[in-house]
Image 1 (cartoon, one colour):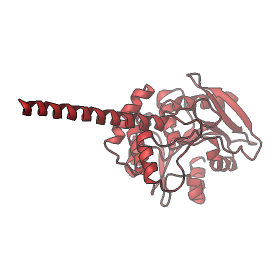
Image 2 (spheres, one colour):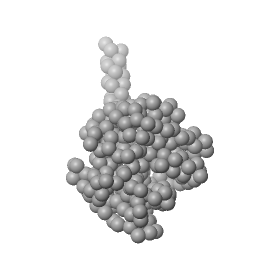
Image 3 (tube, rainbow, N blue to C red):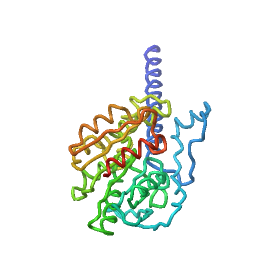
Length: 318
């Protein structure tokens, strides 16, 4: 009977080992998903330069440092510090810069882990073209409320709140919505979610096609395997954040767009692929243009190629 007893002992050890491994995997996934959508109030961020082996192990277990985006320098011109409230009660902050003989207003929406000050160059360029600007801090960023991001899902409410604020200033003016990366996806979801929001046009830069694709892009940037981590992180994040992340789909949102749209993408972008960009472009049902930047990565295109950006945007806004 002794061999049977030993077999049972080994079976128990294997079961405990598997249970421990499952618990460790769940712990790691929880932290990775949590730090993807929740900001550290202390402001800890990934330090510059390649991380050490010890740091990589720490990030793998506890998640990558994700400090709350701090508000950038205010515009170097006369501006108004304005606030408004999203439909769910979240208080939002923005900078409004009016111009004389304005051709309309461009509301600008930043990307993931950024803030309104990061769009200062774009805002200045729009003002040179004769447009007033509204630079918005999404929830969880800059001077707006919260320490959380839904990577464009709930931020659609922020887009609608900003649009409504601009509309109330002058109901007859032209309103354009500009978004980059997560900001572009937020705009697309806003158009889908709020059919009464009818801007004159959209300028979208490097939107990701889905939350799965955004997760893959983030993992690529950290030199981690995309699968099965991307799906596991989105699944875990869905449980944490109260919305089904697999339905966060910019391609589906784009099918609701019937206003003129300028879509721009950097050909060297390591996070958003050409396939994602072409899928979004094909889904847009209104008049559309696609402009690419041969040397641009996931970055500001007006800084990468000012002449090309200004020519494409000025032509679109005629």
